[in-house]
Length: 265
Image (cartoon, rainbow, N blue to C red; front, top):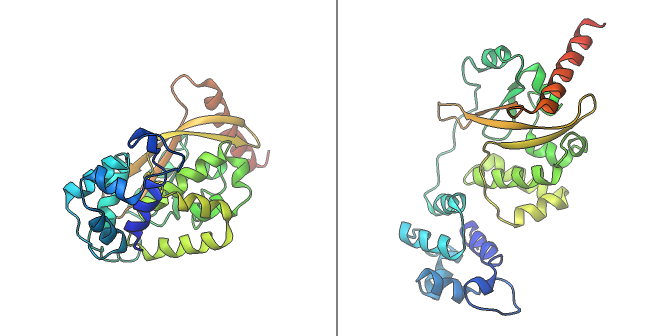
């Protein structure tokens, strides 16, 4: 079965039948039910799942997305899976001027994430906020294999789910990320279970909760700024929500602690 077929199978298993075909005890949609809801033949759906038909129309993809109750991210993922393979990009290089930009944001934790979820650059406050924000670290690998991440993130289960969903969105036709999926699937049961759900959600702005050994527990807004050179790199920056005095005080305390460590006083 192709990845396109695996996605269809996984997502139709999660549709509540009573919402579309009436009550029954068996969970999920049967293949024939999905075909009927999408307005295609069951035989054609089988060919799509098996990869014998690799070029479904945009109308068919939209109909499948509606039948599966997919959101816009899910529909976009269907299009990527059904589209032609993309050419492998060249070696990743940090966009010019970005490290200087990060250093200029002295009061804002910020780092650059590459297309393979590696940290390419970060400023001192980002590294003080979470040690994994250090150049050379891979954020997906750290979320699942570094026990400390379960401490630094107050909502680690949510972070794990969103990390896998973002990885799923980025991994189509990317050999490096597919190798990472195989590696983590072999060694971590939680990753394996989350990957099998086929959730898709690219990284975007949202609230993240931290548990810091110096500043305690607090939440901040995460902003995702895409570098405009088509490299797939993003700048991720954090700031307290407007009026959040707890988060502001926590960030100030982390900054003061950094100053004490640098000066040795």
